[in-house]
Amino acid sequence: MANLFGEYVCKLDAKGRFMLPAGLVKQLTPEDQERFVINRGFEKNLTLYPESEWQKITKEINSLNLYNKKNREFVRYFYRGASELTSDSSHRLLLPKTLLDYAGLEKEIVLFAFGNRIEVWSKDLYEGTMSVEPEDFSELAEEVMGRINNKEE
Image 1 (tube, one colour):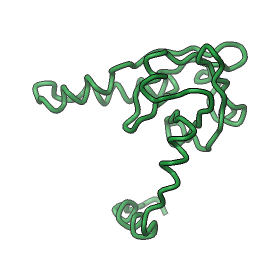
Image 2 (cartoon, rainbow, N blue to C red):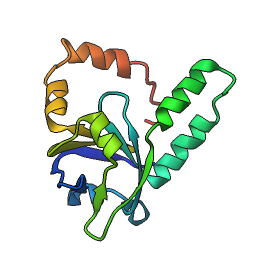
Image 3 (cartoon, one colour):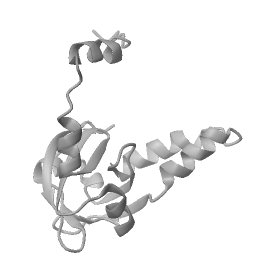
């Protein structure tokens, strides 16, 4: 599993392309530096997956019981707009127009990498979202991370 991390500000060109930053490319295996899948994020952003990670996620999603209405709705929305992307020799990726419009991406974007994915945000929306600090981050950390019992010590 990938262990991506970092925040990167990038510029979109007139065609909707951006260059993957060198620091992010270095974190990807050679096989994962060329092929990606992008889809709508859970917020008003996009999520970029290396092809190998997308395969793992779709395997999990495809195991959902499609006789359950909520599962069908989730699957439809999750896959809506999903597109394969291939980087060029300069590590540039071309974003589909429909996804650019969905996420409100214009000139400056932020790539926020974590775990096995890279979120693609409008710079303004990202800064607005991240400027709202949780009232008590310590309490949030306890609530979220306090459930993890790490036995690998």
